[in-house]
Length: 70
Image (cartoon, rainbow, N blue to C red; front, side):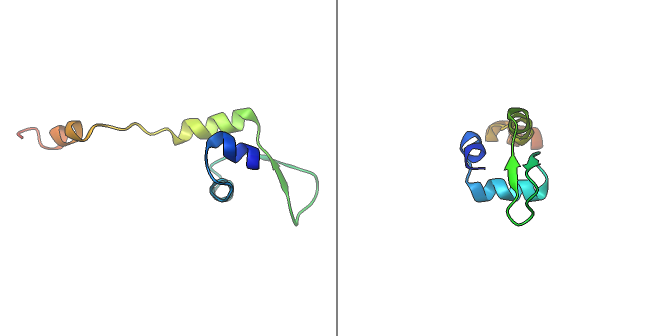
């Protein structure tokens, strides 16, 4: 979990929240239920990263589209 958080450049607690929300895939290693070991494949991390990508639009362009007469 620590390695995946470092790769995604986020805190482990944030990664756990994404796991709880179901926004990142993983598989569970072992049969323990008290402290499950979650394994993230490189493909899981890439899919999550691609899904988190947001396009940032410059403020001037956004204002121009909302108010074309300005």
